[in-house]
Length: 428
Image (cartoon, rainbow, N blue to C red; front, side):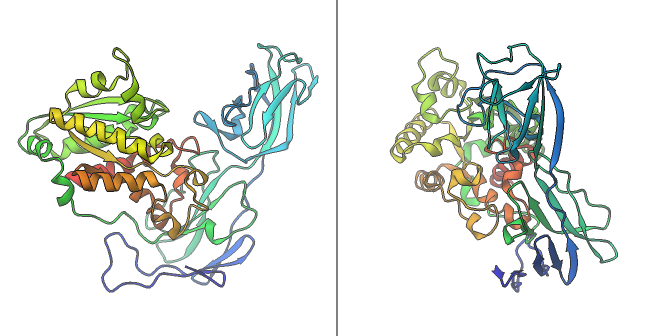
Protein backbone atom coordinates (compact mmCIF):
# COMPACT_ATOMS: atom_id res chain seq x y z
CA UNK A 1 0.00 0.00 0.00
CA UNK A 2 1.04 3.64 -0.45
CA UNK A 3 1.10 5.94 2.56
CA UNK A 4 2.79 9.33 3.04
CA UNK A 5 5.08 8.83 0.07
CA UNK A 6 6.08 5.41 1.35
CA UNK A 7 5.71 2.13 -0.49
CA UNK A 8 5.33 -0.01 2.59
CA UNK A 9 6.50 -3.58 3.03
CA UNK A 10 3.51 -5.89 3.36
CA UNK A 11 3.11 -7.58 6.72
CA UNK A 12 4.36 -11.13 6.65
CA UNK A 13 1.94 -13.96 7.30
CA UNK A 14 2.92 -16.70 9.71
CA UNK A 15 2.97 -19.16 6.82
CA UNK A 16 4.33 -17.83 3.52
CA UNK A 17 3.03 -18.93 0.16
CA UNK A 18 5.48 -20.53 -2.25
CA UNK A 19 7.54 -17.87 -3.98
CA UNK A 20 6.48 -15.12 -1.59
CA UNK A 21 9.31 -12.80 -0.57
CA UNK A 22 9.90 -12.29 3.13
CA UNK A 23 11.16 -9.02 4.59
CA UNK A 24 10.09 -6.59 1.85
CA UNK A 25 12.14 -3.40 1.58
CA UNK A 26 10.73 -0.08 2.73
CA UNK A 27 10.79 2.36 -0.15
CA UNK A 28 10.20 6.10 0.10
CA UNK A 29 10.02 8.66 -2.69
CA UNK A 30 12.10 11.59 -1.48
CA UNK A 31 12.22 13.76 -4.61
CA UNK A 32 11.28 13.89 -8.27
CA UNK A 33 14.05 11.41 -9.12
CA UNK A 34 15.26 10.17 -5.74
CA UNK A 35 14.19 7.35 -3.45
CA UNK A 36 15.39 5.67 -0.30
CA UNK A 37 15.34 1.89 0.03
CA UNK A 38 15.72 0.67 3.60
CA UNK A 39 17.24 4.06 4.37
CA UNK A 40 19.75 4.02 1.48
CA UNK A 41 19.42 7.04 -0.83
CA UNK A 42 19.39 6.31 -4.55
CA UNK A 43 19.19 8.71 -7.50
CA UNK A 44 17.30 7.44 -10.54
CA UNK A 45 18.34 9.00 -13.87
CA UNK A 46 15.52 10.63 -15.81
CA UNK A 47 14.41 8.88 -19.01
CA UNK A 48 16.95 9.83 -21.68
CA UNK A 49 15.97 12.01 -24.62
CA UNK A 50 17.43 10.34 -27.71
CA UNK A 51 18.28 12.62 -30.63
CA UNK A 52 18.37 11.06 -34.09
CA UNK A 53 19.95 13.03 -36.94
CA UNK A 54 19.47 12.34 -40.67
CA UNK A 55 18.16 8.80 -40.33
CA UNK A 56 17.95 7.49 -43.89
CA UNK A 57 14.81 5.92 -45.38
CA UNK A 58 15.11 4.54 -48.92
CA UNK A 59 11.43 5.25 -49.58
CA UNK A 60 8.23 6.16 -47.78
CA UNK A 61 4.70 4.77 -48.10
CA UNK A 62 1.80 7.13 -48.66
CA UNK A 63 0.50 8.41 -45.33
CA UNK A 64 -3.00 7.13 -44.61
CA UNK A 65 -4.73 7.91 -41.33
CA UNK A 66 -5.94 4.55 -40.05
CA UNK A 67 -5.35 3.13 -36.59
CA UNK A 68 -2.42 5.37 -35.67
CA UNK A 69 0.01 2.51 -35.29
CA UNK A 70 -0.33 1.68 -39.00
CA UNK A 71 -0.66 5.13 -40.59
CA UNK A 72 2.76 4.89 -42.22
CA UNK A 73 6.26 3.61 -41.50
CA UNK A 74 7.29 3.73 -37.84
CA UNK A 75 10.34 5.88 -37.19
CA UNK A 76 13.06 3.43 -36.18
CA UNK A 77 13.66 4.90 -32.76
CA UNK A 78 10.06 4.30 -31.71
CA UNK A 79 9.42 1.18 -33.80
CA UNK A 80 8.05 -1.93 -32.13
CA UNK A 81 7.24 -5.24 -33.79
CA UNK A 82 4.75 -4.34 -36.51
CA UNK A 83 3.81 -1.26 -34.55
CA UNK A 84 5.32 1.70 -32.67
CA UNK A 85 5.81 2.94 -29.12
CA UNK A 86 2.97 5.40 -28.43
CA UNK A 87 3.59 8.90 -27.05
CA UNK A 88 7.36 8.52 -27.17
CA UNK A 89 8.05 10.88 -30.09
CA UNK A 90 8.52 14.63 -29.67
CA UNK A 91 6.35 15.70 -32.63
CA UNK A 92 7.88 19.19 -32.72
CA UNK A 93 11.33 17.71 -33.31
CA UNK A 94 10.60 15.99 -36.62
CA UNK A 95 12.50 17.38 -39.60
CA UNK A 96 12.82 15.87 -43.06
CA UNK A 97 15.08 16.71 -45.95
CA UNK A 98 16.24 15.19 -49.21
CA UNK A 99 19.87 14.12 -49.72
CA UNK A 100 20.43 17.33 -51.75
CA UNK A 101 19.50 19.40 -48.69
CA UNK A 102 15.99 20.51 -49.66
CA UNK A 103 13.71 20.73 -46.64
CA UNK A 104 10.37 18.93 -46.82
CA UNK A 105 7.25 20.41 -45.25
CA UNK A 106 4.77 18.60 -43.07
CA UNK A 107 1.32 18.59 -44.62
CA UNK A 108 2.59 19.36 -48.10
CA UNK A 109 5.29 16.71 -48.59
CA UNK A 110 4.90 14.35 -45.64
CA UNK A 111 2.63 13.70 -42.70
CA UNK A 112 2.83 11.70 -39.47
CA UNK A 113 0.77 10.73 -36.46
CA UNK A 114 2.08 12.56 -33.41
CA UNK A 115 1.33 9.94 -30.77
CA UNK A 116 2.63 6.94 -32.74
CA UNK A 117 5.52 8.30 -34.79
CA UNK A 118 4.19 6.66 -37.97
CA UNK A 119 5.09 8.67 -41.04
CA UNK A 120 4.48 8.73 -44.79
CA UNK A 121 4.67 10.90 -47.87
CA UNK A 122 1.81 13.05 -49.16
CA UNK A 123 0.67 12.34 -52.70
CA UNK A 124 1.33 15.34 -54.92
CA UNK A 125 4.21 16.52 -52.74
CA UNK A 126 7.92 16.59 -53.55
CA UNK A 127 8.63 13.04 -52.34
CA UNK A 128 8.32 10.32 -54.98
CA UNK A 129 7.67 6.67 -54.22
CA UNK A 130 11.38 5.84 -54.65
CA UNK A 131 12.84 8.96 -53.04
CA UNK A 132 15.39 8.60 -50.24
CA UNK A 133 14.74 10.95 -47.34
CA UNK A 134 16.69 11.93 -44.21
CA UNK A 135 14.70 12.33 -41.00
CA UNK A 136 15.76 13.89 -37.70
CA UNK A 137 13.73 13.63 -34.49
CA UNK A 138 13.81 13.16 -30.71
CA UNK A 139 12.13 10.49 -28.61
CA UNK A 140 12.13 8.97 -25.13
CA UNK A 141 12.35 5.15 -24.84
CA UNK A 142 11.22 2.88 -22.01
CA UNK A 143 13.60 1.65 -19.33
CA UNK A 144 13.40 -0.95 -16.58
CA UNK A 145 15.93 -0.48 -13.77
CA UNK A 146 16.50 -2.61 -10.68
CA UNK A 147 17.46 -2.02 -7.08
CA UNK A 148 19.58 -4.99 -6.01
CA UNK A 149 21.27 -6.21 -2.87
CA UNK A 150 24.85 -7.26 -3.53
CA UNK A 151 26.58 -10.31 -2.11
CA UNK A 152 28.04 -8.18 0.68
CA UNK A 153 24.61 -6.77 1.62
CA UNK A 154 24.87 -3.35 -0.01
CA UNK A 155 22.06 -1.78 -2.03
CA UNK A 156 22.64 -0.30 -5.46
CA UNK A 157 20.73 0.80 -8.54
CA UNK A 158 21.37 -1.04 -11.80
CA UNK A 159 20.17 0.63 -14.99
CA UNK A 160 18.37 -1.29 -17.71
CA UNK A 161 18.96 -0.71 -21.40
CA UNK A 162 16.51 1.80 -22.95
CA UNK A 163 14.22 0.21 -25.55
CA UNK A 164 11.19 1.14 -27.61
CA UNK A 165 9.53 -2.14 -26.63
CA UNK A 166 10.11 -5.03 -24.20
CA UNK A 167 12.74 -3.32 -22.03
CA UNK A 168 14.56 -5.96 -20.02
CA UNK A 169 15.68 -5.91 -16.41
CA UNK A 170 19.44 -5.55 -15.95
CA UNK A 171 21.31 -8.82 -15.54
CA UNK A 172 22.19 -9.85 -12.01
CA UNK A 173 25.75 -10.64 -11.03
CA UNK A 174 26.58 -13.64 -8.86
CA UNK A 175 25.31 -13.14 -5.33
CA UNK A 176 22.96 -10.27 -6.20
CA UNK A 177 19.27 -10.27 -5.27
CA UNK A 178 16.71 -8.11 -7.07
CA UNK A 179 14.54 -6.20 -4.59
CA UNK A 180 12.48 -4.00 -6.89
CA UNK A 181 12.19 -2.65 -10.41
CA UNK A 182 11.67 0.92 -11.55
CA UNK A 183 9.82 1.46 -14.82
CA UNK A 184 10.03 4.77 -16.68
CA UNK A 185 8.78 5.91 -20.08
CA UNK A 186 8.10 9.10 -22.03
CA UNK A 187 5.17 9.99 -19.75
CA UNK A 188 7.28 9.81 -16.59
CA UNK A 189 8.04 13.37 -15.49
CA UNK A 190 8.76 12.30 -11.90
CA UNK A 191 8.75 9.12 -9.87
CA UNK A 192 5.46 8.01 -8.35
CA UNK A 193 4.32 4.82 -6.68
CA UNK A 194 3.22 3.54 -10.11
CA UNK A 195 6.85 3.45 -11.25
CA UNK A 196 8.08 1.39 -8.30
CA UNK A 197 7.56 -2.37 -8.52
CA UNK A 198 8.62 -3.93 -5.21
CA UNK A 199 9.12 -7.67 -5.72
CA UNK A 200 6.65 -9.36 -3.38
CA UNK A 201 6.87 -12.81 -4.97
CA UNK A 202 9.34 -14.58 -7.22
CA UNK A 203 6.79 -16.86 -8.89
CA UNK A 204 3.08 -17.51 -9.25
CA UNK A 205 1.75 -19.61 -6.34
CA UNK A 206 1.23 -23.29 -7.09
CA UNK A 207 -2.37 -24.43 -7.45
CA UNK A 208 -3.92 -27.89 -7.27
CA UNK A 209 -4.38 -29.55 -10.66
CA UNK A 210 -6.96 -32.07 -9.45
CA UNK A 211 -10.12 -30.27 -10.58
CA UNK A 212 -8.77 -29.31 -13.99
CA UNK A 213 -7.48 -32.82 -14.64
CA UNK A 214 -11.06 -34.09 -14.36
CA UNK A 215 -11.90 -32.14 -17.54
CA UNK A 216 -9.41 -34.02 -19.76
CA UNK A 217 -9.45 -37.66 -18.56
CA UNK A 218 -8.92 -39.26 -21.98
CA UNK A 219 -5.95 -37.08 -22.89
CA UNK A 220 -4.31 -37.69 -19.53
CA UNK A 221 -4.85 -41.43 -19.78
CA UNK A 222 -3.16 -41.55 -23.19
CA UNK A 223 -0.23 -39.48 -21.95
CA UNK A 224 0.26 -41.67 -18.89
CA UNK A 225 -0.03 -44.85 -20.95
CA UNK A 226 2.58 -43.69 -23.46
CA UNK A 227 0.11 -43.52 -26.35
CA UNK A 228 -0.13 -41.10 -29.27
CA UNK A 229 -1.82 -37.78 -28.45
CA UNK A 230 -2.75 -35.16 -31.04
CA UNK A 231 -3.01 -31.59 -29.74
CA UNK A 232 -4.34 -28.65 -31.75
CA UNK A 233 -3.38 -25.10 -30.78
CA UNK A 234 -6.25 -22.94 -32.06
CA UNK A 235 -6.39 -19.18 -31.87
CA UNK A 236 -5.67 -15.76 -33.32
CA UNK A 237 -2.42 -13.88 -34.00
CA UNK A 238 -1.02 -14.85 -30.61
CA UNK A 239 -1.28 -18.48 -31.70
CA UNK A 240 -0.21 -17.85 -35.31
CA UNK A 241 2.66 -15.83 -33.82
CA UNK A 242 4.44 -14.97 -37.06
CA UNK A 243 6.47 -12.34 -35.22
CA UNK A 244 8.46 -14.79 -33.04
CA UNK A 245 10.54 -17.90 -33.77
CA UNK A 246 8.36 -21.01 -33.73
CA UNK A 247 10.11 -22.31 -30.63
CA UNK A 248 8.99 -19.22 -28.69
CA UNK A 249 5.27 -19.72 -29.35
CA UNK A 250 3.17 -20.65 -26.32
CA UNK A 251 2.14 -23.99 -27.79
CA UNK A 252 5.70 -25.00 -28.67
CA UNK A 253 7.00 -24.07 -25.22
CA UNK A 254 4.14 -26.04 -23.68
CA UNK A 255 4.63 -29.19 -25.76
CA UNK A 256 8.40 -29.26 -25.12
CA UNK A 257 7.64 -29.35 -21.41
CA UNK A 258 4.78 -31.82 -21.83
CA UNK A 259 7.04 -34.23 -23.73
CA UNK A 260 9.58 -34.01 -20.93
CA UNK A 261 6.85 -34.82 -18.41
CA UNK A 262 5.51 -37.75 -20.46
CA UNK A 263 8.57 -39.03 -22.37
CA UNK A 264 6.92 -42.29 -23.47
CA UNK A 265 3.94 -40.60 -25.11
CA UNK A 266 4.00 -39.63 -28.79
CA UNK A 267 2.74 -36.05 -28.76
CA UNK A 268 1.81 -34.44 -32.07
CA UNK A 269 1.27 -30.67 -32.15
CA UNK A 270 -0.83 -28.98 -34.82
CA UNK A 271 -1.34 -25.23 -35.28
CA UNK A 272 -4.30 -23.19 -36.50
CA UNK A 273 -3.91 -19.47 -35.80
CA UNK A 274 -5.67 -16.68 -37.71
CA UNK A 275 -4.50 -13.16 -36.95
CA UNK A 276 -7.08 -10.55 -36.00
CA UNK A 277 -9.93 -13.07 -35.89
CA UNK A 278 -12.31 -14.64 -33.40
CA UNK A 279 -14.09 -17.94 -32.82
CA UNK A 280 -17.12 -16.72 -34.84
CA UNK A 281 -14.72 -15.93 -37.70
CA UNK A 282 -13.85 -19.63 -37.94
CA UNK A 283 -17.48 -20.70 -37.54
CA UNK A 284 -18.55 -18.39 -40.38
CA UNK A 285 -15.91 -19.45 -42.91
CA UNK A 286 -17.30 -21.42 -45.89
CA UNK A 287 -16.26 -24.97 -46.84
CA UNK A 288 -12.90 -25.05 -48.58
CA UNK A 289 -11.59 -22.07 -46.63
CA UNK A 290 -8.24 -22.40 -44.93
CA UNK A 291 -9.97 -21.51 -41.65
CA UNK A 292 -13.28 -23.33 -41.97
CA UNK A 293 -14.12 -24.68 -38.50
CA UNK A 294 -15.50 -28.06 -39.56
CA UNK A 295 -12.59 -28.84 -41.86
CA UNK A 296 -9.57 -27.28 -40.14
CA UNK A 297 -10.49 -27.54 -36.45
CA UNK A 298 -12.87 -30.49 -36.16
CA UNK A 299 -11.38 -32.19 -39.20
CA UNK A 300 -7.94 -32.78 -37.70
CA UNK A 301 -9.51 -35.11 -35.10
CA UNK A 302 -7.42 -33.81 -32.22
CA UNK A 303 -7.54 -35.53 -28.86
CA UNK A 304 -7.19 -32.14 -27.23
CA UNK A 305 -7.84 -28.63 -28.54
CA UNK A 306 -6.31 -25.72 -26.66
CA UNK A 307 -7.85 -22.40 -27.68
CA UNK A 308 -6.46 -18.89 -27.25
CA UNK A 309 -8.61 -15.98 -28.42
CA UNK A 310 -7.97 -12.50 -27.04
CA UNK A 311 -9.93 -10.77 -29.82
CA UNK A 312 -13.25 -12.26 -28.69
CA UNK A 313 -13.08 -9.91 -25.70
CA UNK A 314 -14.45 -7.19 -28.01
CA UNK A 315 -17.57 -9.16 -28.96
CA UNK A 316 -20.98 -8.89 -27.25
CA UNK A 317 -21.67 -11.42 -24.47
CA UNK A 318 -24.48 -13.14 -26.39
CA UNK A 319 -21.95 -13.98 -29.12
CA UNK A 320 -19.69 -15.66 -26.57
CA UNK A 321 -22.58 -17.78 -25.33
CA UNK A 322 -23.53 -18.85 -28.84
CA UNK A 323 -20.08 -19.46 -30.32
CA UNK A 324 -18.55 -21.21 -27.32
CA UNK A 325 -21.68 -23.35 -27.03
CA UNK A 326 -21.48 -24.43 -30.67
CA UNK A 327 -17.81 -25.30 -30.36
CA UNK A 328 -18.34 -27.35 -27.21
CA UNK A 329 -21.23 -29.27 -28.76
CA UNK A 330 -19.12 -30.09 -31.82
CA UNK A 331 -16.10 -31.17 -29.77
CA UNK A 332 -18.13 -33.42 -27.50
CA UNK A 333 -19.91 -35.02 -30.45
CA UNK A 334 -16.58 -36.36 -31.71
CA UNK A 335 -14.88 -36.94 -28.37
CA UNK A 336 -12.41 -34.04 -28.48
CA UNK A 337 -11.42 -32.53 -25.14
CA UNK A 338 -10.99 -28.78 -24.78
CA UNK A 339 -8.85 -26.47 -22.66
CA UNK A 340 -9.55 -22.74 -22.91
CA UNK A 341 -6.79 -20.25 -22.17
CA UNK A 342 -7.90 -16.97 -20.69
CA UNK A 343 -6.21 -14.15 -22.60
CA UNK A 344 -3.15 -12.19 -21.63
CA UNK A 345 -3.45 -8.61 -20.42
CA UNK A 346 -3.28 -6.02 -23.22
CA UNK A 347 -2.42 -2.31 -23.10
CA UNK A 348 -4.01 -0.87 -19.95
CA UNK A 349 -6.48 1.58 -21.51
CA UNK A 350 -7.91 -1.20 -23.69
CA UNK A 351 -8.76 -3.10 -20.50
CA UNK A 352 -10.12 -0.19 -18.52
CA UNK A 353 -7.03 -0.18 -16.32
CA UNK A 354 -5.32 2.99 -15.16
CA UNK A 355 -1.99 1.45 -14.17
CA UNK A 356 0.32 -1.56 -14.52
CA UNK A 357 0.99 -1.61 -10.80
CA UNK A 358 -1.03 -2.35 -7.68
CA UNK A 359 -4.01 -4.45 -6.52
CA UNK A 360 -6.13 -3.14 -9.40
CA UNK A 361 -4.24 -5.66 -11.54
CA UNK A 362 -5.13 -8.72 -9.45
CA UNK A 363 -8.57 -9.34 -10.92
CA UNK A 364 -8.98 -9.08 -14.69
CA UNK A 365 -11.76 -6.49 -15.28
CA UNK A 366 -12.82 -7.85 -18.69
CA UNK A 367 -16.31 -9.40 -18.80
CA UNK A 368 -14.97 -11.88 -21.38
CA UNK A 369 -12.56 -13.39 -18.86
CA UNK A 370 -15.33 -13.69 -16.28
CA UNK A 371 -17.45 -15.42 -18.93
CA UNK A 372 -14.70 -17.96 -19.73
CA UNK A 373 -14.23 -18.81 -16.06
CA UNK A 374 -17.98 -19.27 -15.58
CA UNK A 375 -18.40 -21.25 -18.82
CA UNK A 376 -15.58 -23.69 -18.07
CA UNK A 377 -16.77 -24.24 -14.50
CA UNK A 378 -20.38 -24.90 -15.53
CA UNK A 379 -19.59 -27.03 -18.58
CA UNK A 380 -16.68 -29.05 -17.13
CA UNK A 381 -14.27 -27.65 -19.72
CA UNK A 382 -10.56 -27.25 -19.01
CA UNK A 383 -9.39 -23.81 -17.91
CA UNK A 384 -5.80 -22.58 -18.13
CA UNK A 385 -6.05 -19.19 -16.46
CA UNK A 386 -3.22 -17.20 -18.03
CA UNK A 387 -5.02 -13.93 -17.25
CA UNK A 388 -4.75 -14.66 -13.53
CA UNK A 389 -1.01 -15.11 -13.91
CA UNK A 390 -0.69 -11.85 -15.84
CA UNK A 391 -2.54 -10.14 -13.00
CA UNK A 392 0.14 -11.42 -10.63
CA UNK A 393 3.09 -9.96 -12.56
CA UNK A 394 3.10 -6.65 -10.71
CA UNK A 395 3.73 -8.62 -7.50
CA UNK A 396 6.75 -10.18 -9.25
CA UNK A 397 8.07 -6.71 -10.09
CA UNK A 398 7.12 -6.85 -13.77
CA UNK A 399 5.07 -4.20 -15.62
CA UNK A 400 3.08 -6.57 -17.81
CA UNK A 401 3.07 -4.39 -20.94
CA UNK A 402 6.87 -4.69 -21.08
CA UNK A 403 6.17 -8.22 -22.36
CA UNK A 404 4.29 -6.95 -25.44
CA UNK A 405 6.41 -6.81 -28.60
CA UNK A 406 4.05 -4.31 -30.22
CA UNK A 407 3.36 -2.42 -26.95
CA UNK A 408 -0.29 -3.48 -27.30
CA UNK A 409 -1.18 -7.18 -27.37
CA UNK A 410 1.52 -9.43 -28.86
CA UNK A 411 3.49 -11.18 -26.09
CA UNK A 412 7.21 -11.88 -26.36
CA UNK A 413 8.82 -15.20 -25.44
CA UNK A 414 8.47 -14.50 -21.71
CA UNK A 415 4.84 -13.49 -22.17
CA UNK A 416 4.22 -16.69 -24.14
CA UNK A 417 5.78 -18.71 -21.33
CA UNK A 418 2.96 -17.57 -19.06
CA UNK A 419 0.47 -19.44 -21.27
CA UNK A 420 2.69 -22.52 -21.13
CA UNK A 421 2.95 -22.20 -17.34
CA UNK A 422 -0.85 -22.03 -17.03
CA UNK A 423 -1.20 -25.16 -19.16
CA UNK A 424 1.52 -27.14 -17.41
CA UNK A 425 -0.17 -26.41 -14.08
CA UNK A 426 -2.96 -28.72 -15.26
CA UNK A 427 -0.65 -31.61 -16.14
CA UNK A 428 2.00 -31.51 -13.42
